Image (cartoon, rainbow, N blue to C red):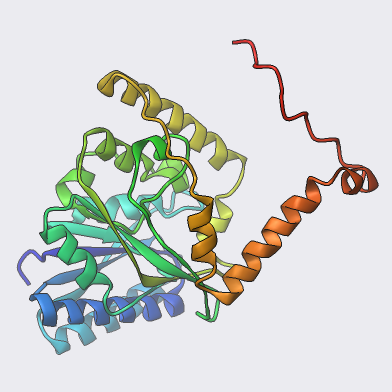
Length: 313
């Protein structure tokens, strides 16, 4: 295959069973995009220094199967030789991005499932002039039973700078734009935050789809669960402060975040019965926690008064 139009980077480490299922779904979506748009797609599996050859062997079988099915889709293997000891596959992502020679790329989790329309939908957005195309998705359990839809809205710099992120790591992006930003694996789960912040500050065109087009699997082995700790929170705060200062310098001011549309959130939860029940439970729990009688019974500290005097700077 000559240089493909799209590279799908799949970072992984010693999870060949999940990986096979994921790559099969990506190849199916790529075949659909090839049939409809004439797209050429490279699936690049980047092994984050797995301790055995199971990943290499699994990819070799998938490479042969893809080649036998036709030239529009290829499956390739790359490897980080020495593991950096981090819990996030940042080194594998950085290697994959550096190896991409396509016009567009996207990063896809090795435990998620791509729906058939995913590549077609976002590749069409990119062809129409987008710099970034963010995807909506279904949250599922470990057995891929759909729980509820997580629908994107337009990315907004003011929101991003206070931690509301409406562009997911798996967004499609122009390759030269992401390669121009230094990817630091030490940022763990926040490694792509500088990419989105830089592109929003530069005024790049972000688009999104409200149609869920992949399955985000939640299970005990989720890497994202491992990153929700004090170190991640500190990294997030540090990056927000850094890019708030950069936005102020380049734009003259830090954009205000959008107001939260609670009515919209409520409507979206209603799309799924389970999701709506979860929303009602969360709302009830919040109401109970605000009840002074309950707080006293469970020896919780009283809530602060609503009208606090402003803090002195």
